[in-house]
Image (cartoon, rainbow, N blue to C red):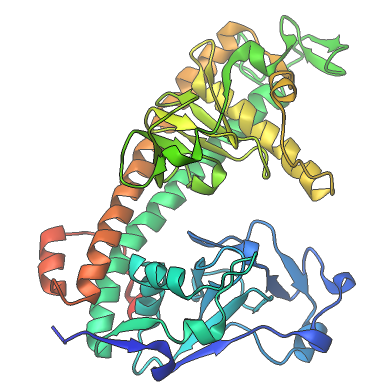
Length: 434
């Protein structure tokens, strides 16, 4: 294996490219919800890569007026203001062919004859990079990583063939994670569709197994909900169907990252796709969530959901809940549906900075009959558990990747040894190893 040398980024063939500023910057009226070119904001680059769920566009004509900041395949986008160090890798697997960046981030573009782009992407996600960023970032009220400071970051350089081999081993892990994510997205979409079909459109199976409302099932007007609901169903509030605990932050001096005390989640910054990532502990826990509880963000953005995979302490940015009738899948569907309400209000400009205990407990809900809830639970719970199992596997894959990355980059272990020990069978990721 080629010897690894630490070389500062300024001495390597890596371009650091800003977005357009000043006179060239599009006006607010030029951004649309659809168009030719995606105009990325820092919120579209997360610790897990790009997030295209809420994007803005500019027209092809406006795109032509801009001089720089447009992505090419194998470019890497790094956030340098606010939340420093979020990173996205742009390749031909993504559906968007025209993307530009806003302020607060930069494009990193490699000479691919000397630097493997995915190897650089892996480095930017590593603790090797993050530890250096902590010493390089500015001390202003809004954290920043100036380009001048970024250039002083040391990069573990090896010949490009070695970089490709390292990238291939680790991208196999990422490819398996991507497959798992697609499976979980499909399972989540199926569960949501079924919930909407049963509890929003009211076409749950009737006694004959046919869709209730569409088959003429009796509907009655409910004054509290201001809508018709199936006969025998009731109106209620969230606290009627859920045991809810509001979080409370422990004393700041009790926080630690050494594993002393109880796992502590302050807010949704710790959230992952399904389970939070453990970052902090507290020796003076206050409010508790149990393993399997739904975790809810009660501060902006209100409504974001995760599941607790272990007993933990929750801070003031969270609430936790579990089902009063042992139907976690139904309660989770209710919360996903409520999140859509919060998201719509946020999109319309009525942003929720937080939600109080009284407001959360009194959120209006439809309460179906127990037989229908139990039938839904029995139908959906196996896929709900499968999602949990897949996400646990993803966290294990991420843990293996993060453990291997510094050792491979520092030359402590060889690619061959790692590949043999893993014995992995994963998706072909040859495109990462260009």
